[in-house]
Image (cartoon, rainbow, N blue to C red; front, side):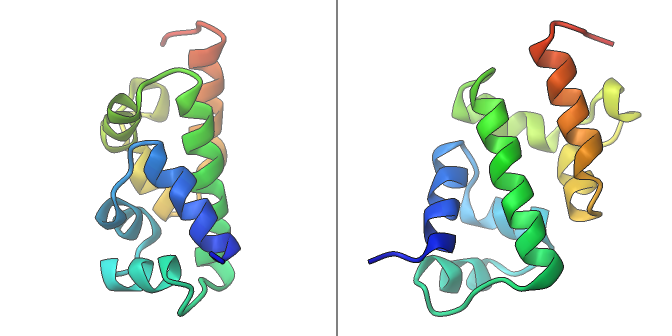
Length: 111
């Protein structure tokens, strides 16, 4: 039986993110993400919060993009985010800005 964290990682990976991408966005190592996937360890504190936020963001992007496009969106700069990358903002804990930008895309507002 897989852990809840492993299930969340599966959603994120099905949405286009690779394990190394998840590690980069969460500010951890790929080996750590692998241990979470295997149920050998669990993210804690701010890292757990960022993981849950990343899952939500990926699910929102799946409404708009293919997995490959969603992955590129996460790592590209966007005018709606003051020319910053969503990956960087998520790492910094600024996920609300990313969610607002996705909401604008979903509503057809392009800045």
